[in-house]
Amino acid sequence: MWEMWGNMDKSHLTHSAKPTHLSHSTKLYMGCDVARFGKDFSVIAIIDDKTLIFLQRYKYKTGTNELMDTNDFADEILHEANSRQIPAGNIAVDGVGLGAGTIDALKKAGLKVYEIQSGSAEVYTKDTQEYRFFNFKSQMWWVLREAIRKGDLQIGLPIESDTAQKLLQDLTMPRYEIKSDKSIKVESKSDIKNRLGRSTDYGDALVYAFWVKYFYNSKPKSNYSYLYKSPQNLYDVFYG
Image (tube, rainbow, N blue to C red; front, side, top):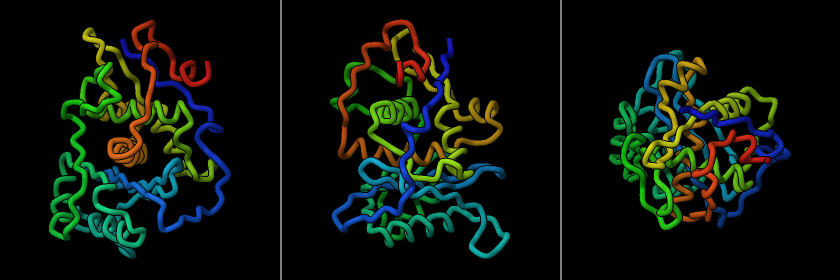
């Protein structure tokens, strides 16, 4: 049975949207979602230790009405990575479908990034060995969910902005179920898109950015014991 992902209190996801001053020692992580269809956008998300500091969508080549291709988006990734001094190991790029072309272009430019294959098997980490996920997508989204639940990530965007509103929709729209083998399954992107009316491009980019940070660095400890009780609404898990 599908359970609602739940509602999020905006105060837990946002903070005063003041300019972020980063020192040269600040570690940044980038997630990139590559557009698949005509109405979708490619999106870049960048986070620091605890805050989303950059979220930008891309569709057209700069100054034109010509649609970007995978090479053009690779150029945008390279620009942000170089200007912010983000190493390749801190960059995760959607490698499904057209994303493979962007990853190939980045490799040719000498940037070997973390390739995201959402449909692949869960990734073993020392912090996730006590529970299971139906696939890698479910694992990534759940890791972000837990980070937000514990206050480990905030969204440093003006809450009234269209970008922030769309991101909040993306983050609260997914449903999940606990399978018979106790693995967690987050519903497919296509199912979410059918209900939301658009692709969760902003949410996916943030999920990838946080995953690469989590996998390489943070590995937060979490208590998932409640998963094996009756399923709860995400709001109750956050604030109950």
